[in-house]
Length: 441
Ligand code: SAH
Ligand code: SF4
Ligand code: F3S
Image (cartoon, rainbow, N blue to C red; front, top):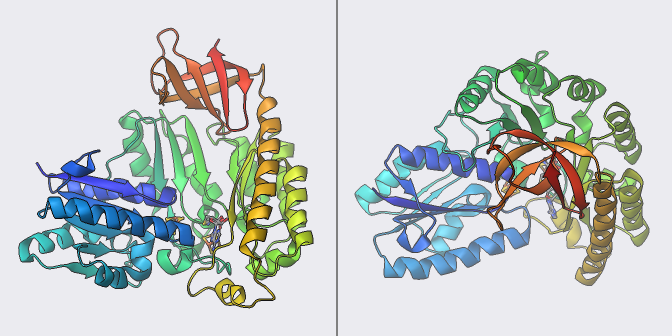
């Protein structure tokens, strides 16, 4: 049987896509290998969210070329968001890439691969848009207890820093019936927790033009027998309304976990980012969440050094992180992306924040984020949490790794008859910013 190796860069959307590629390839009898040197097919699933992400892809390609020279019959495929953005140009530059496909035509992988094998010619196929009907594909999961379930593809916002709408297209919600079937199948296979996935998951159903939205979907899937936990990722503050928050609070399986990127804590910067909410709107949302679910985890992404961001505006972001006490934040220095408004502003010397200043700001913000995360973690000390056992801890096979309902990572010693997929009560004995430790009680 032929082997394939997939390297996945980027976000959960890409990770979920890689699982689909594995599913499609299994129909051609491919088996996954974790050994690159052994692979008949090497797929690079790329990201282009920042310059650093695309640079990473180029460095992989350089290394893979050397491997291919030793194994001339192996094939290299370029997939994902960078491929969608400029796969054709990349293939011209790196002619050893055999197959290029994008985020809109992932389902075409088997045909393209067979064509490449049959003709010995390079294949490049990129669709400008998603197909009218989202193709349902087989999936081979990399996990056993928790799974991602795509519910919406694409994004209709136009944040002025972001390339995602260009490479992931317009929003398209997946049929609720298919979503439910997929979850039922997962539960039958022993999965206990699902994360409803999308770049903009809180826009679910808007394209249906009826009452069905994310809150509706949560109710629609909630009573699936054997399903224990439901999460969703990533939300946009604009679409997190009171009803959604109330629904999460009300439904026992909906976890108190909100990853709702805020991006900046300054109204003027938010306006220029085209985020369409104000700092005060975000505060109201957090207040509502914490009123109904005091234990909820709220996490965010922030960008520092967006063109024109003054030092005072940056300090407003720091103030928000302290005020709102995020459980964790993903921070990034602004990186100009082709075809975005922000990239034009970055060309203007009066607007561009220097690289040194960006570095200084991110250092400062990261220290603050860690500080706040530690405080939030410490609140868990001596409490008893319901933990879903996901797998053995990577560093110690005598320990389990799991998560609290709010999504906090925890390691604890194996004890008793418990196994992967069980829910256990764990007393928290240690807390650092990003993880907890505890003991089964
Ligand atoms: N759909 C999500 C996030 C998409 S991209 C949302 O709306 O929030 C993931 C994160 O990458 C973003 O939250 C943002 O913080 C970061 N990001 C996107 N474009 C960026 C850029 N040009 N430079 C730096 N960070 C960026
Ligand atoms: Fe990008 Fe904004 Fe869409 Fe998120 S909402 S994917 S940041 S354009
Ligand atoms: Fe990157 Fe594409 Fe995700 S650009 S962040 S992999 S949607």
